[in-house]
Length: 120
Image (cartoon, rainbow, N blue to C red; front, side, top):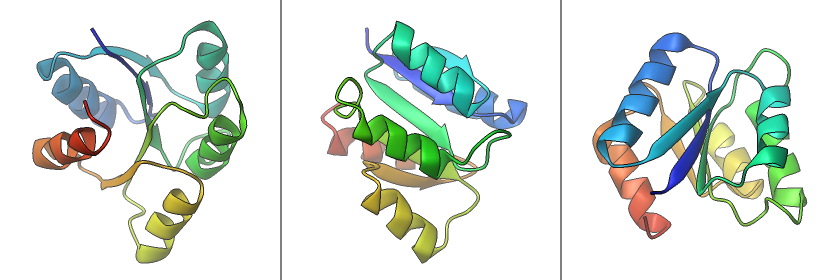
């Protein structure tokens, strides 16, 4: 079973993302901050990271940059997921190495399409 790390601080969005992934057969681990995400990544290597942009301690863009700059985690696909969905936000996500940039509220069709792009 594939494992996804969901980095999200809003409980409603956690429920949506976690529910969709679990319906698709994924095991899901949830953390609520960038610091917790980095701690979790030192303990496990998920098959996917779903990363909110607006978090309490640092932005998802900063976390994505750290993930993609680390030899241990750079190969993990990152899906940015945010209400910040301007073309500039999407461009930043792409430049930082995100495999997809999904708008909230997350829709099953968007998640399914993004998973196809990474072969899952």
